[in-house]
Length: 184
Image 1 (tube, rainbow, N blue to C red):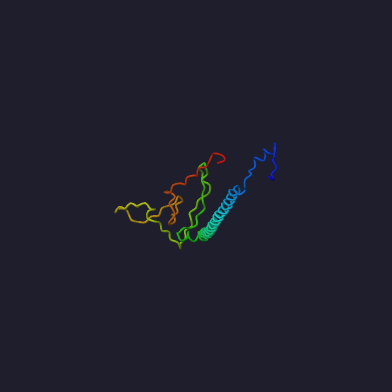
Image 2: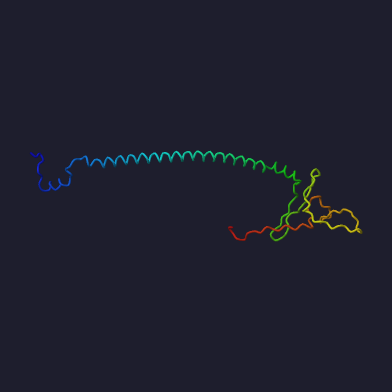
């Protein structure tokens, strides 16, 4: 006897759509698909994990480099600050034979002079030595002229201090150009 009832009509048509054979053959591709997906997922996680760990090692190295470069920058900034301190600048200027300047004079844009310039005060403890290329070669004296040393005279008639430039031979400072365009 056949235990399966015979289906008629619409039920028979729907029954034909479903397979009637054993379910073993249909499970094999599904199981393979699940195993492949799980294996691919595990391999993907392994690759992702190793890439992240490599990135963290690079990040650690870069942070160490950044710290050492920051320390070096701070050390260099301290050196710059030490060299640019007013006391250090004054000491190095005195070592070079420089003296504090006198009162400045300013040129107005119309060419008039504002203020009275004065020469720098000479200090007797510091000797000013200029390199030879600063001086123009002096003409050799003729045998009929007396060989007496002369000092150049300032416009007021006072002798020029040693090491100070001669105002008569020094070119006048040029006024700095100013921008006439507003906003620039």
